[in-house]
Image 1 (tube, rainbow over the protein chains, first blue to last red):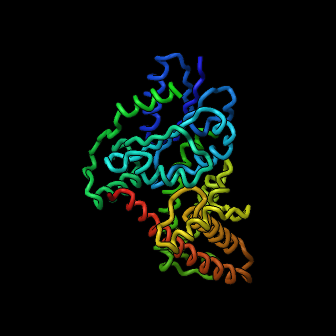
Image 2: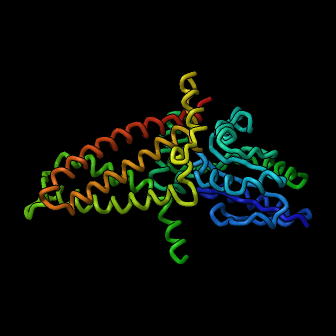
Image 3: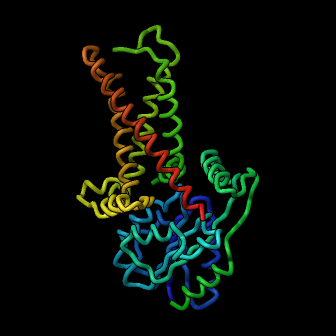
Length: 173
Length: 171
């Protein structure tokens, strides 16, 4: 049975939700998926494949993500591995691929790891689920960019078919 | 290890708390009237600045720990290990008219690291002003004011750079 480690860096929970969905999908085949928060992972040696999902906070991936990659660079480069980024920007059709998503392009420029499997997923907009500071910052950005600003807005932009496709690619890798 | 869940709960709030406390102290500082020491008949804003400042110094220290732990200091202070790779790429990009990227150990992270150093220096000079012998207090007061002005300059730059994130939302 193939052992897969799926690491998540989640701020408001959508990236973790996507990872749990992937775990459930992949485990339907002959694979064991271990789900772990970025801060809890210390040893990658017991896994055959490693994947990381990370969300965007205040316009960038968490600094801990880059440190994690640097720390485990050898394992990430020698085993089948992949990465996906979750952001609200990726809800836009012309910003929802690794090639067109600015955060993914920034990530690829700033890390030494070049994952073979890459994807971007749109996140979740839930103003009531954010703290006051994040809520006002995101509403301000949405106001400027003509997005939804109603404080009760709760929209899940994640394309689950796209997540299914990524899970299938993980199995085949 | 028992403190880990508590730390994880507060670490995500530290940036916001630092923002609110420092801006409050800066905005109310014109109303304070303090020289060598806190007078016995000190006004509300004097007392607020001293004890609010001491509280902020603790928060500043926790915030500095947050950005440095697990090797993250390499992202905010790459110059400490003479790593200028992303910094020089960002600077040469600016020369060619490209805006720097957020994250990693590039220009924006280095500026954020300088902000953390300034914050700690403002806090430290304030604490020393509070503890110093009256004969040295005015000197530490002047250092504290100078460093606070530097920190205000950083905040302005930090806000302007934060607004760069908005470009990612446009088509």
